[in-house]
Length: 225
Image (cartoon, rainbow, N blue to C red; front, side):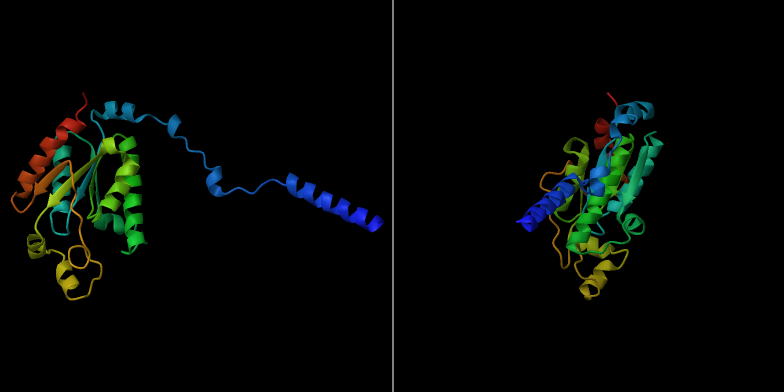
């Protein structure tokens, strides 16, 4: 009988001890962002004299995304706007150099880029994002992070034959030879945007014409009221 009472007392002590022990928490539960204490986006925009937006250039390799992105960045600078180009190869040589081209890595690539663009957006800076982003799902990941009101999807459209004839990097040739797997347009489909904010047919426009058309379209979105 005495041993039973001792056993019950011991169990009661263990239960109470475990109950009183502080619960372990994850690192995520100990993160406290200070976004609400930072200088507001609106204040920064007024200081810079512009409205920040995320311009998302999507299209096949060779369609002209990078070329138009570079041209637009220079044009905006000439017109006294502050903009930053985020280009696929540049990003993959830096912050995303640890990512490959699996489906999961491609999604993570876009997620990181969108988060970077969102930080620029909060800083009052216009970002020009030049990425194939071949599926509606990946583009929607970016749009959800940035916010629909600030995300301008621009379809840089050129027929496959035109893109392949340009092939400045020799990527289509390598993909056709089987040296590159999962290459968009050859052995991976590209899903055309259903309702882009603007479509530029780069097989019908010169670089300067495409940049002019894009800049004129953007003015109503980036000029302060």
